[in-house]
Amino acid sequence: MESHAKYRVFAMVHASKLHPRTLHMAGLPPELAGGVETRKSLPAPDVLLIEQESERSVFLYRLTRTGAPGGDTWHESVEDAKYQAEFELGDVIGDWQPIPPEVADARAFVVRAVGETSGPP
Image (tube, rainbow, N blue to C red; front, top):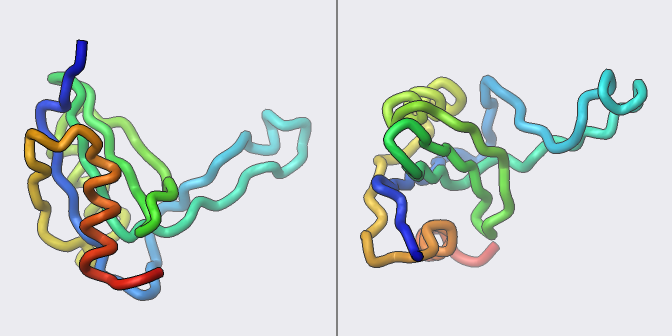
C-alpha cells in the first residue's frame, strides 16, 4: 500500500555563507561514545523540505543541492517546522513552494529544483 505525505513543501536557502543558530551533527556525543568525540558536522542546507506524515508528525529535512542530508527534525505541526527553519536560518529562506501531489519522491524533486536554479555543482 503506497501512501503520500499529506502536505509537502520546499524552500531554497539563499546564502553563500550560512551562520545558522543550530548545528546538526551525525554520531553519538562523547558521553555516549566512551569519552571520544565521534560526531561529524552535517553540511549546510541548500534546500529545506517539509513533509507531513500524519496529523501530528511533520519532518523538516535539510538537504544539499546534491541530496546529501544536512539534518532532520521532527515537529508536531507544519507551523512548528517552519518556525524551526526560520529560527535556524532567518531571512535566507526562500518562499515555500508546494510539491505536486503526483510526485512520489519529494527528495529527488527538490534536488532537481535546486539543480535547475543553481547550475552545476
